[in-house]
Image (cartoon, rainbow, N blue to C red; front, side, top):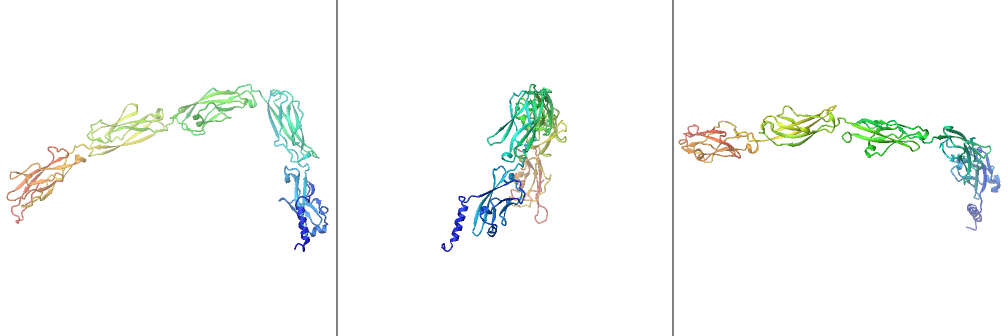
Amino acid sequence: MEISHPSRQVVLFFISLCSSGMLCEPFRYSVPEEKKAGSIVANVLKDLKVDVKELSARRAQLISKSSRQDFQLDPHSGNIILKDKIDREVLCALNDPCIQFFEIVLENPLQVFRIEVQVEDVNDNSPTFSKNQIIFEIPEQTPINARFLLETAHDLDKGENAIQNYILSTSEYFKLDVQSQNDGSKYAELLLAKPLDREMIPQFIFTLEAVDGGIPRRTGIAQIIIDILDNNDNVPQFEQTMYKVQLMENSHPGSLVAKVEATDKDIGSNAYIIYTFSQAPTDILRSFRLNNHTGEITLVGKIDYEEKQNYELNIKATDGGGLSAYCKVLIDVEDENDNYPEVTISSIANPFPENSPPETLLAVFSVKDEDSGDNARTTCNIDANLPFHLKRTKNNYYQLVTQQPLDREQMSCYNITITAIDQGSPRLTSITVISIQLSDINDNPPMFERGFYNLHLRENNIPGLFIGSVHAADVDTEQNAKVTYSLLFGKIREEPASSYISINSETGNLYAIRSMDYEDIQDFQGKVPLSEDPAAKSGGPSCTVNQAIGANMNSGQSDWLSYH
């Protein structure tokens, strides 16, 4: 196969040589920037060693190495033509030289030729300064030959078309010294040639001109303004050495607290005052802000009279030359009625005995208000319908005492509302409720549900037979309300009634102890006394017991035992 296609071997060899970059040097051309679209850059027929017919037949193409397509190849003439007007500064920015890289590709056989087009600079940019005005502030006692570096102008052009010189308008006080940097660019410095006197000439105005070397020559202009600064020979003076301020607590952040002001007889920066805090502790910095330029002091944090009643601020005023003066700002915080009275219970008798006499101490409490003056003065009261009243003692202490006898059986618990009111404006009120439980005293006897009980029992009854019950209640509680029952007295045929009838001491149930005969026992009457546990009371309530026995069981007459 290699023998049958020798021409292919030659072509491949040629391509490798021209693509290696070693044997095939690029064809180099140049074009000035700002050329119009359609301008001819170069004709490549001679360099490619082809005629127009062959160039067209081999489908010649111009391929750019970048994304831009500023050039094109005319295959009918061999001319490289500008598609658009080109700007060297846009194409290459600060890169110099500005070279565009291409390849011309021919087919049948395939050949690739490297092309380089250098875009040459033309003087199409003027020097420019970043600012139209260059401002200096120079003290009036600056020594002779002092140097002041001027801002460098910029020119997008290169070489001779770049900046070559600076020119200053005529002045006997300042001269211009133009020097070159290592890269050949120029810069300029002002030299002071004559002593300055602010009182004679407070300001100088010059024109600085940057000149390039192109043809035609282009220039850029900036104005130089030199303000002569006054010698700082005056110390700032405050209008007052001490400021006194009243400030309500809870004032809103951003509120103006005070404004200090100092003046300086100098001018310029020597008269410019900066205000700062001097040796300010943390609580000052947390609560207040000082405007460094206006001397206004504003509130930024919370001011609470109960935490701190006054502040002392030390303010320093410093001029531009470093001279300072001092003043004090004394801030008195005024109380606002923002705290509710607080009731603290010191002692309380709970439960409280119901038989306590009038004027018995029930509770002791104190009232505290964190405010001051009238805002801290308090009064206390309770409901007038309660059987209690308040006694005020020293240091805002109160005693809650009884004013009449108490009865647990009528009211076992009291919820006493203590209302504390301060004398501020508006008045603030707090409410505290204490609950008092009355403890029981055994001051109530047991009471039978009825004063008379009728029960019936047939004769010849079985011993132990349940006859009936009596019931009594006690309005006291717990042990004081526990009732026990017993037979007080009574006789049947000269024998104690307790030998015939028994009563359950806990339930009040009555039982027949033995069989009874109507003929032998016409009736029974006795009393059932009640006693309270743990100790029975003598002379307590009782009920009367009557009994009767029927003579004939079958006659239909009653043979029941009745008792009361």
